[in-house]
Each structure stands twice: as C-alpha cells, then as structure tokens.
Image (cartoon, rainbow, N blue to C red; front, side, top):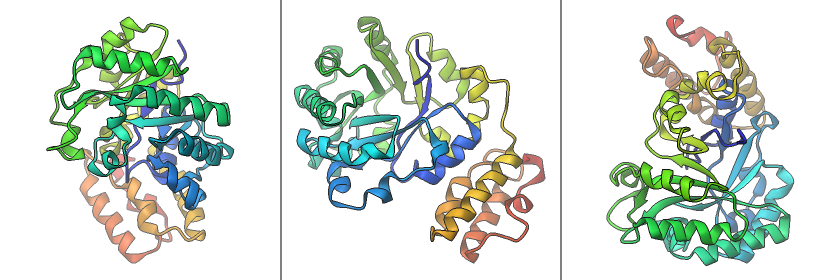
Length: 321
C-alpha cells in the first residue's frame, strides 16, 4: 500500500491557507496537506496566483477544486496545472448553502455521472486523474447502497482515491459547522467501502482528534485525514513522521518558530499583513502552560504591526519550547 495518503490534513476554508500549510510542513515533512477549496470560475476569471501560490517546501500538497461543470473544471485544472500540485481533488462533500446553490459540493453525490464526467474532462485536458472527497450521504439519500453506487460510478471514470467524510450532510437546517458535528459518525460505512472496493484507496475523514486514533483506523482503511483538530492544536502533528512514516526525527519547537519567522519576514517584505502570518501560530502552545500568555502576546504583536527585534522566540513561554 502506498503511503501517499496515510495521513493528511483536510482542506478547511479560512484555515489551510499557504501560511498555515507552511507551518505544518515545518512540523511534519510527510503529512499530505490540502489547500482551501477554490471554485472553477475563480481560477478562470480571477487572479490565479492569489489562490495557487505555495512554497516549494509544502510538497506533498493538494489543490481542492469546487465545480459542477466538466468544461469549467477542465479549464480551471489547466490554469492550475503549471503550479505543480501533487494532487487535484474534487469537492463533493461541502454542505454550505452557497456551495449547494452552485450545484457542487455534497449535492454532486446525487449526480455521480456528472462527477465522472468532470473527472474525465479534467484528465482529457490535463492528464491528471482527480481524487474525490465526499460524504457518506446527504439528506434522505443516506443508505449504504447510495454511497456504494456513487463510488462505483465515479471509479469507472478512473478515480482511485476516495476521501470519505464519515457523516451524512443535511443541505437544509444545519449550517456547515453543525454539519461537522451533528450528523453521527458512520465509520462502519467507510470500512465497508474498503472491503467492497479493495482496489481503491479509501481515506477516512471526520471525528479524528489525535495521531493514535488515526493510526488505529489504518487497520480498516488506507489513510486518515484530520481536520479541525490540527487547526486547534497544530503541534499534535509533531509525532506524525515517526508514527506513520518511520522517521526517527522529531521536530524542535524553537527551530520551527525560528524557521517560520524567517518565512514570515520574507512574506512581510512582499506586503503580506502581519496578522495573516501570525494567525497560524496562535494555537501552537494550546493546552500547555503559557499557551494563553502566548496568544495574548501574539495578539498585541499583530496590532503593533511588526515583529519584535528579538524575534518570536522571545515571546514564547519557556515551558513550551
């Protein structure tokens, strides 16, 4: 089994931007990182670099595309291709009202033939076979047969990697935040998918809060994706390379902070606001002694608008470094 999808960090809107991904790459060299979803028209008609630029050290890094139109998806993928992402992923799992109105996200699960056509057109245009991220179902379409038919149809277009958020979604009555917690987890459906489609790579997403839990789930699936837990406590990835990829090294937090500061100074020189660069760091000591003090210091720093002469390390709580 390939280790390409053993452990990954989920695409999260307003979370997994290039700065947060750079920080995570300093903590784990092997965990696969997913960027925020980008809509096809945004890449075609907007400023691609704003959404696609990333630091070379971020590899392996994946782009998630939002689309319900095969032609537009292919055009957007062609725009993105020169950036050299390791993966292009189609979003068939987002339940937000805005996304649903556009006909993509989780509503695509009701149209597996369209998903297959999108994947086909992207491959025809770029040579890239997309991966697909989806739910176990939506609204009243929540039996295992519906899920299996979706996967079977999409797999017929050549897709080999399915990332399954192990909850159904409600397209009405629940906002995106509630859709991440209210529908019950359905791990057994994901496990059954792997048993029924052993030739496919099945990655489980949803409800995973630590590395030990993720490692245990690998007895049933090919990979595990962690989402909000990493945003809330980025340092939980510190043991990822050792536990999942056999690396003997563990990251040193002082070195991580120093490296991130060097990166931040480069971005500041390009005009990136300091608050955007500090935001990924706010939770790096969360749950540890001095963590709240660290957050207060960063907040004051962001308001001041410049890094301290002595660097970030002079702000760090000694107990955490």
